[in-house]
Image (cartoon, rainbow, N blue to C red; front, top):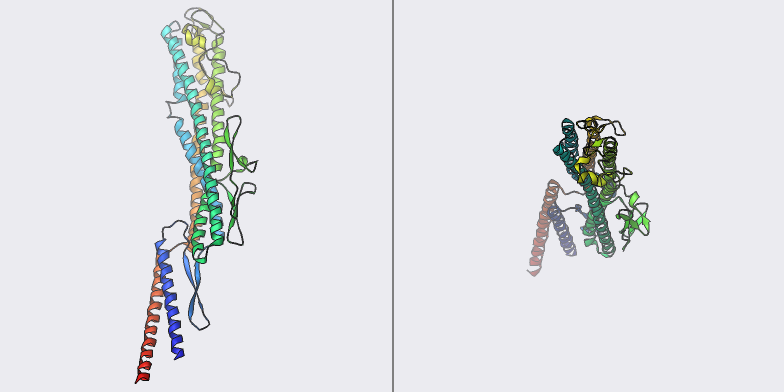
Length: 450
């Protein structure tokens, strides 16, 4: 009789095990589209009575593939941040013919018109108006570059705040994981894995596992962000001369070391790409100012004045685009616009020389003003296109690594359907066995009573 009761106990445990298997398969299917979820598997084993017992539920993870995903994400995020920021810069340059190139054409056309009628007051007024518009176009473009830098700087500050919040979440999850019971650990690890990937998208972080199940997170040259249940928040300081954000950790400036992740891309745009575009713009504005002034000062205005600069003289190329302006004396009196080379009425040699500057290869790289502007436009477009291409390439790599990880951790509907069928058939078989033993016990009890 005791053997029959042992058989019932064993079968009851088997039913519980198969029911647990069905529950695990159902949980996997329910979380098919849950970000960060790792497929669960039921761990079964023999007990001392020869029956089955549930040893636990294990999340299928590959630590090496998780680390590889975190390694690839910062490169993709960096190129993505650069592509987004540079696309805005590219759009701010304006369409061909209606941006600075268009203003240059109109400016030199105005001098050509003055050469055709050097005594015309209207032609002189047009030259002054076109000079103002050209200077205004340079100032507007410089302001757009400034705005792009400020937008990148604002995003950097936001990224640091987001990174600190995620680090605090990892710290809290560490505490929860080290104190949780077995049924809750897998869900907590899933969430932490997702948070760590979000951190990797912001900056290139290093993750080290601890023996108690927690992780440590560092950034830059080994500066800690998370140590077990403790968080070391990054700080932002306003650095001179522009007041742009510098990322600090325990008094150490990490800004130059943040080369990957979204922060790395934004820092590259703010501190390298846009300043390079502005330098080219300043060089162009300075070159135009210097060469136009040199020719203009050698000529004579309609009122007999000479030595008059057309643009306000500049002492250096740095900041030239923002500072470029028609000289106040010329702006107030267009009779000061020089058209004559010798001061005689009807002489148009200076006006012709000024108009001919459009074709002069007076820039440092032996290009015309229009060609120099075209090179700046090309440089911005090329950088933006390169960032987009690199982002796509990096995204493909991340996708491939994630697919490899999904082969281990991902949920497959076909696989779970097969698992459910397996546990269902096992449950039905154990149920029949249980029924058979129960019927046998009834028969034996009836025999004893009779």
